[in-house]
Length: 409
Image (cartoon, rainbow, N blue to C red; front, side):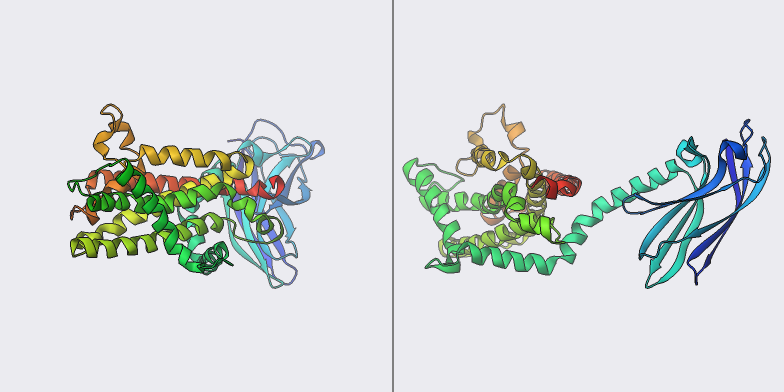
């Protein structure tokens, strides 16, 4: 340690918004600090959110030289900016045109203040080091990484609801069937796949070899796939489609991928309703194990949302992603046992392909809706773990890249 700061006294004169500082500086180095060589006490004011330097304050030279082990009491006046906001003040010795001592890891006085409504107030003051601040910033970043995605969705829930309603209505505006296409689209898609695989190719799933048995097992596997493919297929384009929101308005762009996921859930809700009606007609009842569905739907939403954040941010910089994602989803569909039994997969590949989150979801939906059993705990907790990692990791990726969206678009 080459510097010691002792007994700091910090006071605020509210009428003038001036912070008065008095502290003792001890030269703990072997060098003599000469005022003529630029040794002084100074301050800098930073924006705490961006760490941007706002004010490079005046210097107060030491009145006399400080030899090794000598202490001096120094007083300093710090006028706060008139603009409202929070400010972080570094009070530190320095050698002019050489360095600030705090930049070399030595201690400095940290003052946090706030200006609001023409009034100023001190928040706190303490001795700190740059390394200690970096550790605190890292801990805050980790904490924000776990809270910001959830808080952002909750705070903008009304906006998300309005945007989803607008998206669904706009998708079918002017068509003869209107919003009924929300039901017809998943129904027609399911019937198309059923015709190809169930009637033309005569594929069979589950213990029931009949066509109705195949239809139920196939459609149960399609339920998680429909909202997933709809949202991820549109995600690479979503920021580009709403570029005006990014460039001209103060708008929470992180909600745009969320809108896709919620719109996909609306599609799944209609498809699930149709499926339960079919289950009631063909089997006479809806099993009580259907109550396990939230255990599968929640990680499905988390996984899809994290992947949509990732793809939406990447799509801004990699425009070809929007073209490639269709091929990837087609490949993903056929690697997931939706239209064929899982036993048809090569034995060597099954341990790898079974790690696919959609594989777990498809098997889970069939288990709770058709096999009248609870989902297997082992695959489910792994699904939850992967979904949480993708959810928070996708948001962190989006948050990191969003700062340059306006420049790239």
